[in-house]
Image (cartoon, rainbow, N blue to C red):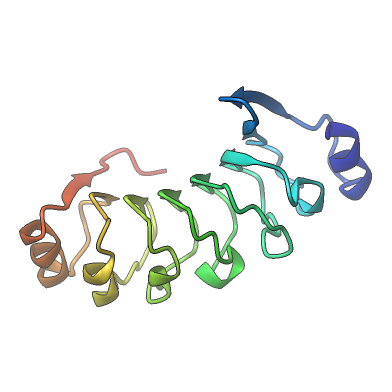
Length: 168
């Protein structure tokens, strides 16, 4: 896998890749801190449950197909929209903290989302559609979020709001 990623990402020097198995066939893959990593096509079709791409530049996730993905970590990447992430129907945890993703109106594409980290995003607009994320249990945000009506609605539904004070 490492060699395949190096071939399709020749600009990446010293690719950081760690992986472990989860259960019989699912993988936990850590590709964090690969600032030049863009092409992830070698991951397509693998049984990945957890994928960490924190600090990995602007990874091109759209062409890959991972039906088993439950947790996706994209903190400190240069992603700008949820459209750049694509559809992962089994996704439970999404970390897009410290990215440039400011609009969450497409969040309903993740019907099984239980945890969302959007802390450290400048000028973030919390979408009223967050209220319709029926399985959402926890959201991590920056203390300066101004969409109090949306937060009140989420709290009323039992969603835990965590304020991250350690923004980057």
